[in-house]
Image 1 (cartoon, rainbow, N blue to C red):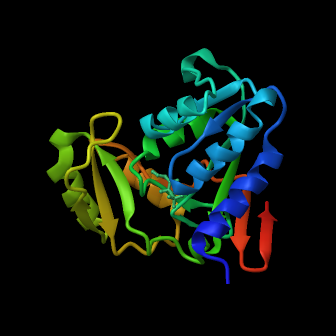
Image 2: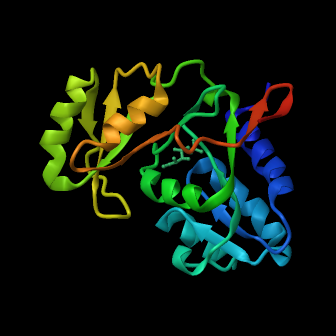
Length: 219
Ligand SMILES: O=C[C@H](O)[C@H](O)[C@H](O)COP(=O)(O)O
C-alpha cells in the first residue's frame, strides 16, 4: 500500500515528461508541486526557467537556482503544472487549499496546457466535499459571505491568513457543485470577489493521477 506522499511523488516524477526543452514552465503551489519542483531542479539545464503562482513556490524555485520570470515579461508558457484539492472526470477542479488560487488562475490562463498532478484521493464524481476557497477584498467580506449563503453555502473566514495579494479567503462548506462552470461564473460576479477556487472554465487539459496500481494519464 503506497502512502499519499508516495503517490504525490509518483505524479511529480511523471509530470517531468510533459516539460518541453527550452520551456518557461508554469509552476503551481502546494505539497504535490513542492515535489515537482524537486524533480524540475534535476532537469533545470534543459529549461529556461519558470513562472510561479505564489511567493512560496518562487522561494522554492529560487532555492533550487531555477530562474523565475515575471509573468508580464513572458509571452509563451507551454505547460502549467499544478495540483488540485478535488478534480472530477471532466477535469474541473477545486483549488486554493493553500490560498494561491488567484495567481494560479492567472498563470493557468496564460499557459497553453494545464497538467494537473493529483493522487487518487482528489478524484471525485461531484465537486464540493472540499470547502470551496474564495478570495475576497477585505472590505467586502460580509457582503460576499451573505451572497454565498444565498447560494446555499456556509462560508467560513480563514483566520490568520492573508493571500499573496493582501486579501482574505472565505472557505465555503456545504456546496454540492453539480454545474461547476455556472457556479464559477456566479460566484465570480459577486462584487468584492477576486476569484473563486473553481477551475471549470479553464479546466485541466491532462490529469496525471497517482493510483495504487500506477500512474494514469487522463485527457
Ligand atoms: O492553493 C493551493 C493550490 O490550489 C494547490 O494546488 C492545492 O491546494 C493542492 O495542494 P496539495 O498538493 O498540497 O494537495
